[in-house]
Every structure is written in structure tokens, then in C-alpha cells.
Amino acid sequence: MINIALPKGRLGEVVYDAFEKAGYGCPQIHENSRRLIFESEENGVRYFWVKPSDVAIYVERGAADIGVAGKDILLEYEPDIYELLDLDVGKCRMAVAAKNGFRYDAGRTLRVATKFPNIARNFYNEQSRDIDIIKLNGSIELAPILGLSDVIVDIVETGTTLKENGLSVVETVVPISARLIANKVSYKFHHEAILALSEKLAQCMQKKSEESK
Image (cartoon, rainbow, N blue to C red; front, top):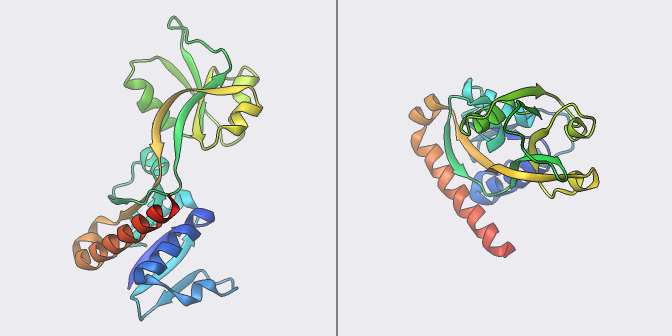
């Protein structure tokens, strides 16, 4: 069995559909139940749903052989795993945003509110910028509006929430998408099986992308 950690929610459902079409389906997963683990002996897979931010932990610690995690999670927590494939779904970007008309003042420390302190710190370190990180867990957009921070570093999809709150993107930090990741030990001992799965999944995602164009 290959143990697969999938993120709960819409992204996980999209990715599971690709796994199923690639020949790694598990009929139990469609049942309306409270079960946490679903397996198919026929296809040699065992799935379980976890919180998106926990997928990398399950994979890194070996509870899952492979999993699907957002690039934002991988950059923020830097888990010791292999990144096998860009699935080209769940696409968005990590960006710096501020109140409309904001201008950088090079003479003072920049106050940065974010859920992703590691990403923000690495981004500004590359610019040799002096910053003060303010770690928040939600409603990041409020920080510059109420004067708590100068800018925010957060995930931006459509930009609608920013626009409705008088904010706009100042610069893009990094593009984000879902990635197939693997436990390093599992990849060594189940190399052929994991590689075959990765290749079939890549073909399936490529076909889906072409069909949507």
C-alpha cells in the first residue's frame, strides 16, 4: 500500500479526481461516512484527508508516503521531503499588499503583517530590507487599514478582498500551486511505485489542463 495524504477541501477533491483517473481510485472515498482512512487493495493505495497545513508533516514523519501540499506550506515550513511534481492546480500567488498609494520609506523599519513569517523574512532578506514581522492568524487585511502594519504578505487569488478594502498588490513574492511530495525513505524503498504514480498523475493533469483550454 502507498499511503497518501490529501488536503481537505476543494483542492483535495480536484487532486483525488486526478488520482482516480490515473488508475489509483478508491470507491470507499465516495461513501458518506465519518471514516478517516480509505483504501483500495486492488489499486494498492490508502488515502486519508488531513488539514492542508498538516500534509507535509504527515509526509515528512513517514505516516504518509506521498501527499499533496501547497507551495506556500513548503516554503514556510521547509519540511525535509522530496518535491516530485507541480500539479498546476490550486494556483495563486504570495504577494505583498498595502493601502492604495503606499510608498516605501527606505529610512525606517518596514512593518510586515503575515501568516507566513518565514516566507516574508526570506523575501526581504534578499532585498537587505530591515523589517518588523507581525505574526497574525487571520484577517490580515485589517493590519494596514488600522495602522498595525505598513504592508502584508499573504496569498492572493483574485484580489477581490484587497480591492474591497482599499488595498492593492505592491509586488509578487512567489507563484503558488499544489505539489506532489514524497517522504525521503519511502521514495527510496518504493521508488518504482511512487515514480509510476507520479508519471501517470502528471499525464492526467496535463490532459485535464489541455481540455480546459
